[in-house]
Length: 526
Image 1 (cartoon, helix red, strand yellow):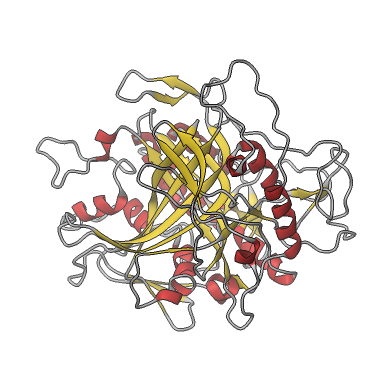
Image 2 (image 1 turned 135 degrees about the horizontal axis):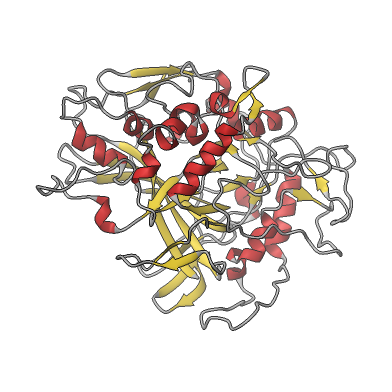
């Protein structure tokens, strides 16, 4: 499979949200306030690059309706890809008919993408609840996942999505494909000037281009004004029949009322705001708006940008990631007859192919200085299960210390991310308007624990930042700023560089090295 796929995030934040001077109290505007004439908001979009990706057999099946394919029962697809993120301000206007956009921010990173069925997501959420899984709570001790985390795993959102007599996930048809690609990105708040785009692949309907980054893009920043911020970007999107998007304003007479998650939450919020009926908590949770009066939520100082910003990335992690970027990995020959579009050219295009991405996304270090293992490097293959798992055997858990518990209604799940953006990336351009800015970024990867791999290793982006602050900031390797022409798929090629969390000296008990597969070094701290 070659090309790219663009998907809108169902999660957004109001552009009018504010933070107090210390950055510990976030205030959400009221959607029904007389002063709210336009639902201006921050919209997150991803573009997923497919570069010689092979769909595992049995994952897709034909569909009798307007869709060509759908996920087979009990099947999903979890794979690595180069992903371009766009965070843009959308001004839809009072009637939602003349939208304008401004302040386009983009960055690229390597991360996991999950295609799942609604039934699969529901089963995963209920399984975590029924298994009574626990993790460390930010305030000390341990607690159930639903009581100590936010987002879809939080008790409040989980109840609306998967529990009760009419859970939102049950309302989606089985042919819907949910796309989950949340990730913790190390984002350089200072924009970069991109180089001229490089052609990656020549396809029948266009040419994939990429603007490659350089080691200088990942140089340390001024310690007096550190610019590397850890942003835990959530992403929940869906692929469905376009007729189900219900974009017409107003809806034609006789049209059934749209179901939750079927329609973009901001658009549905606009349709319902004039109604006297109470707004659904699920809509308010996904859009981060208050209903009739502004809502304020308090956070710890560690949860804003100051507590998550560093002057540099870890030099060893940078060195290791650049090693995999600059050296070609062995790509095994495929079995059977190959597609006419299959190619393994020795060019920068190899950086977007699954083999290179798998090496970049490894969660352990077998050697320092970096080198290819004589025993073969351990590569975690793509998954076909219908599970919310981040390789290897991790969950992406969002934690924060907030005045509103996860079970509160509305169950706001991503306010901490809004606070991070508002006090970090957005702060640097407050009061200004621009067309587009590009940033370099890297991915904080889930780590393999020291010793044997545990069955379930919890990893929280919050704890990653905490442990990194105690040692040194995690690091990355070259990311690229994608570039595109009207007929091209935007592409981030030198960007495949996940972040390797900062690690102590090689002889540290947590990082003692041995040759795989006899027991590779497992790095903790996450």
